[in-house]
Amino acid sequence: MDDCIFCMIARGELDARTVYSNDLVIAFDDITPQAPVHTLIIPRRHYADMGDDVPDEVACALFAAAPKVAAIKGVAETGYRVIINNGRDASQTVQHLHVHVMGGVPFSHGMVHFSQ
Ligand code: DGP
Image 1 (cartoon, rainbow, N blue to C red):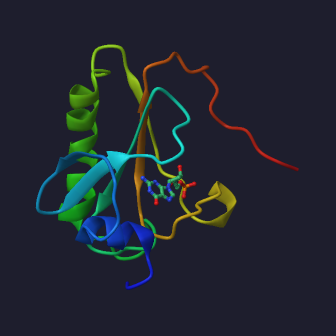
Image 2 (cartoon, rainbow, N blue to C red):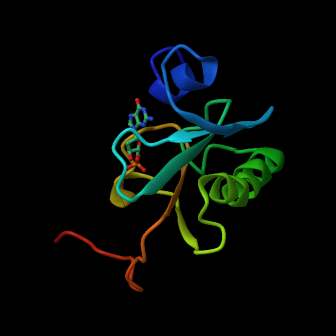
């Protein structure tokens, strides 16, 4: 996807603060962090969202990268939240599948807020 910003980051064409990477995924800090630790994990290949025929090995790689990112960012012991905003009602703004890893602060127990 030529005009996808996360594809550009994956190709090294757009700067990002890389936290972790392997053959299948790359993790980098969110440009507008909403917590002291806010890192995104993306597949190197373009998938718009979770319904975009994501191969099992890519889904596993995204899942497996979260605790690695948490350890690198120093929040593995204190805990962290893992979020995927998937589709319109979830307010997904970048149409390249990504996993948010957020931590460094205690989050409230409830996590669902919705607009009328
Ligand atoms: P979402 O709402 O789940 O689609 O979140 C997209 C996130 O992507 C949002 O928290 C901001 C982040 N983001 C958007 N553009 C860039 C960028 O160019 N670089 C980085 N590092 N993050 C970005």
